[in-house]
Length: 171
Image 1 (cartoon, rainbow, N blue to C red):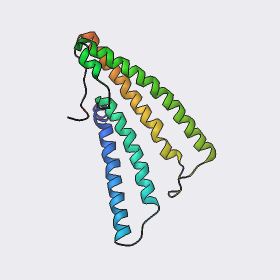
Image 2 (image 1 turned 60 degrees about the vertical axis):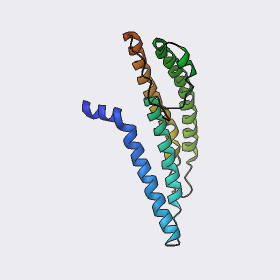
Image 3 (image 1 turned 30 degrees about the vertical axis):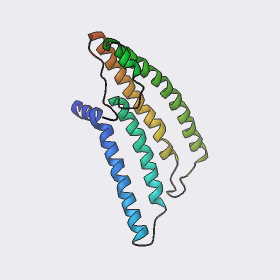
Image 4 (image 1 turned 90 degrees about the horizontal axis):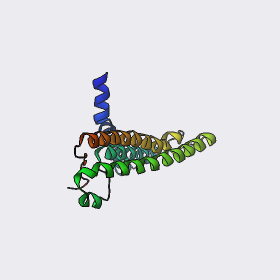
């Protein structure tokens, strides 16, 4: 059980991104084939691919927070000595946590409104709550990853190690 949880922690976002990406590609290829070869397209294809793309984006954002691969201004990292980088990362994580808290709260307000009025997706005819839930789910996943990063930074600072710099967005 512990190894399974470790595997999910290490690769959960990657597996979910792969599933959503393959789903998007499959649906779009089928819809292009149906439209241009069969002269018929479905109502659900575009909408399903669009909502899967939204989930893909939010899960990807969580993965980028974990890997520190998100876009950031790192000018200060070049100016400050390496022993202070952990403090700067920690400050950035705390600011992002505050933002994520507000965003999580307000996205839940949107979910509550959609539930109150029982809003349906136009083509799929399922509750739009399922699709709007991508936003709070993404912020919740990012919050977990931010807390993990903050804990790692605190441990690095206490041990006198260099802070985890993450992966570059562009090499």
